[in-house]
Image (cartoon, rainbow, N blue to C red; front, side):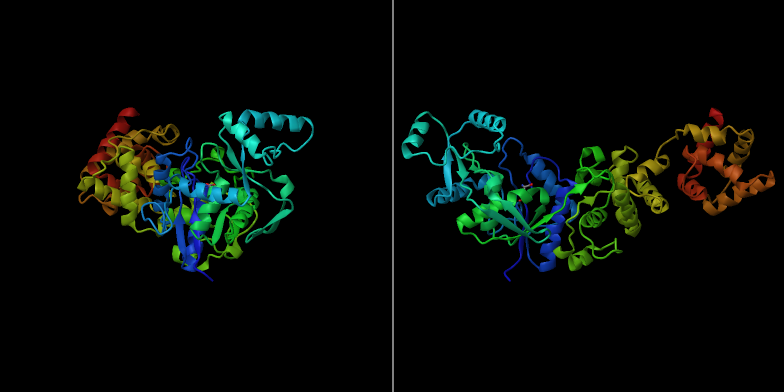
Length: 484
Ligand code: GLU
């Protein structure tokens, strides 16, 4: 078989979404598994909606996910340009071929006329699609329309019969051509439509496998007709199922974060997202959930892609991210934590030696408890702030107990006198005090935790105390005493 060539062809009209990320991942794994070529092509012919910002955002997301491409923007390649907006001449050339061979014809109808015709058809119970009214215009009729100053669009002449898509995921899908109108391939402004540009590009870029979202399945018969009309060899098609929210409706903003950027900013790890995304429609067997990247490349095949819709479960993704966090080297997490802490204004983005040491300690102590890197901010902010804000419930539950003032008053000088000040020495002091006054250790520890962290849940209190240091601990005990 010839070399495998696949492509990811995003329209730059927004961020890279979870669905697009899953599509590019499947393409990438398929290419890497086969030792083939991955092409990135930017489908920016929708001038109004395409933006450079979106191109950059998509490229950033791909890089962050670690999904590289062998041909396309930045890297170039033999089959460029890789931006459709730079290929308009090529589309014109192939459109001319279709006119010459009789497969395409100019249509002079204005949007208003088409709208009228659609309404009239529906009123009479006929299908609302284009009626083919410009199909058989005589040369004179064409000339007179042009004399009126009408700029024609080009339409493809759909033949009778049926078109079969042999899909690698869905099997044979039969489309009856009578339900496919003579569709536009080149708009009156000279821009190609998606269906036309995609065929010209996939053919000229020698794409062997088109792997994409199954919302494009209804476009595929149109594309096949054009492949055949242009004498191009057909690629294989694989349409991957929709991604639904837990409520079984199409995944959308209502379900929460849907763009890769949002997950990155929320402190997800690229390997976790990749691992999660691959399971949306692919399974190696009934059990295995965790896959390393190399393992995925080795194991990924299209025959294990399901045609059933996949359900996006944010809780499972969160769980998986926690798993990956625990598998990650502390140094890597520290780098990431610095970004999150700096963004939250808790440390400077060029951390001082002291901030760095503290971040390392906090990462080590929180690593087992967090599920996203940004949880370090939510669960560990008190390590970095001057004072703490008390959680109201924690305050009421633990700091209003009658023995708390005397406890804090007694503990403060003892902690001040503790040297060296570390978790072992501090534990001794606190447990020793509790024993001395006949209290359970917890009765002392719980209020102390609220005084030092502002909350009732934290990592082991003695470790926390060691990281906070003597001065901060004593200052916070003091402030707690004042607010009682
Ligand atoms: N630009 C199209 C999209 O983003 C590409 C579809 C395809 O892969 O053919 O949906």
